[in-house]
Length: 100
Image (cartoon, rainbow, N blue to C red):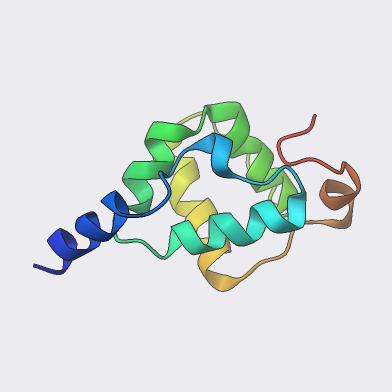
């Protein structure tokens, strides 16, 4: 029942898509932390992010895991987001989320 309620809420809010993430790394991180709280976060992240973007997020958290499978990357990222892990100084200095 709760999942149905949450899906209804999602339909009445701003769509969850990559283009709605602010470019600023700190603001983008805040948005990702909000999305990570959703029950369907793992499914959403799997649909909207490419592997290289997920790897960038792990790098930004200071995690040097070199995995290329979404099913392994997403739980690690969600864990960082739920714990409130900050991006590294280097990632913030890039000035843009997902900047290489």
